[in-house]
Image (cartoon, rainbow, N blue to C red; front, top):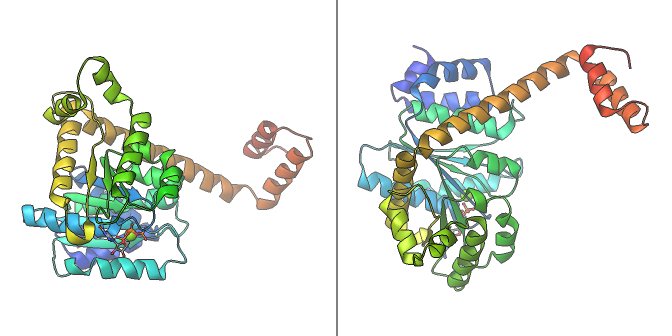
Length: 336
Ligand SMILES: Nc1nc2c(ncn2[C@@H]2O[C@H](COP(=O)(O)OP(=O)(O)OP(=O)(O)O)[C@@H](O)[C@H]2O)c(=O)[nH]1
Ligand SMILES: [Mg+2]
């Protein structure tokens, strides 16, 4: 039996082993992903991102638990992408401790991932891991990333639904994330609503949302109140999604059922509007583009000696040849 077959049969040990292969980008791992790929495309991919320490892991943990309570046949996976490797021993351990109450539920699978400089970096590794879990029958796959850099945005783009999690007292971080992350938020979570300042955080997020998504104004201009605009969205008949803001206390499980309802509404919206299929296409297309770029680059680097490349850089810096000329010479094998 191949590793892929064992994964399809629901063997957790095989699953864990294959994810390690994917992480290390081994030939065996690649072959198994190729074999599994036709079995993918069923899972709901849920991105969980936001400022460090805002409670993403706690929230993912609670979501997994509540989903499992609501639907005993649903298999749930959490992939925690670890951006600060190699200084992360503590963080990974922390996640494991916080998630320990899910240990023992054989329909929940939790995994931390780190890039090891593999082809296409963390985004490609994550895409591979998600495909493996999807094929293995995990109907809900959460992908936790810290909302900081470009690669986190790329990973979040993997998801059908992206939660951006913020918490009171992280005001500076909210400023920092507003540029990239807020545009990709489908649902905003104000976690740690038990702490003072939750209202302020919520208001700040709503303010930024209006900048990122002018959609509500369209409704206002058409004479709808804000509540009516939201009702139109909840009705699911319209092609418009206004990101809702949900307050939660992850550590106490408060607001989690409401959050699951919002996630469900977003899923309905995606399916009904045709956006689900569109996101699927664009996700696979970007994965293809990314892999193409990385593969061609890697092949090219194997062929062109490092010294030749450095000489080209030098010539460009001395203004002797243009960057375009340098690349042409390197690719065509002309002398420099
Ligand atoms: N008061 C309060 N504390 C919370 C809540 N949710 C999480 N925490 C605490 O906040 C800390 C960080 O929680 P995590 O779930 O690890 O946050 P995270 O966003 O995953 O953190 P990183 O992955 O390190 O960025 C922990 O000590 C949690 O117990 C909450 O709703 N209220
Ligand atoms: Mg975490």
